[in-house]
Image (tube, rainbow, N blue to C red):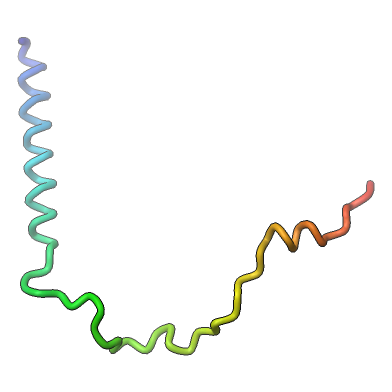
Length: 66
């Protein structure tokens, strides 16, 4: 093992530890209610209409003749 191998191993270990610690720190503490009452009205007035299928719209478009 060379010094470079050891340096890369230590750097990789440090990066892994930092990622794990960061993931632990951004996790919310306590119980999080996933399917509770919606308190944010954003999206409450969205239409239930079906989306337009782009494949069908392209099939109906006339071909451009050059």
